[in-house]
Image (cartoon, rainbow, N blue to C red; front, top):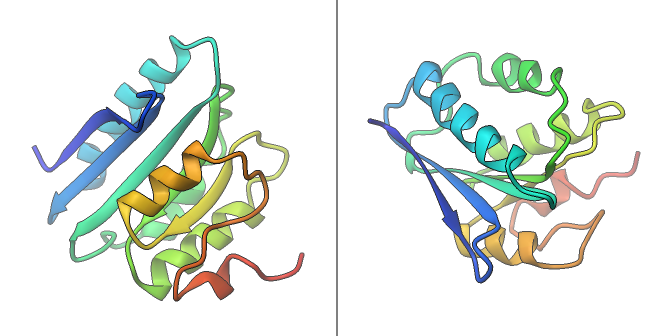
Length: 141
């Protein structure tokens, strides 16, 4: 399997979806669905980290696939953090945040899984941790 889902962080209230090598969207959606099932079973908001650092990035059609995911509400999902140290992933996170409409979750970018965990465990609501690509996330509305 080219994707996995695990609980991480000090309180184990963060879900880490990790993609490996040349993963496919079907594998991603299977892991995402497991994560959403885990999130629905919690009485508190859950954060999701999507780590694509062990890959060559997102497969083709990434923006359309990810924007399509923002259509269905995930009521128990608080933050979604895309992890990869490159400007394309930062730009995708910024676009998801802008086009999320009235959805409850917020989309962020982090350069490392450790930075993403720190962001999820923080009390930040509308800020991101600095990365060398942070300018994409801090543009004015």
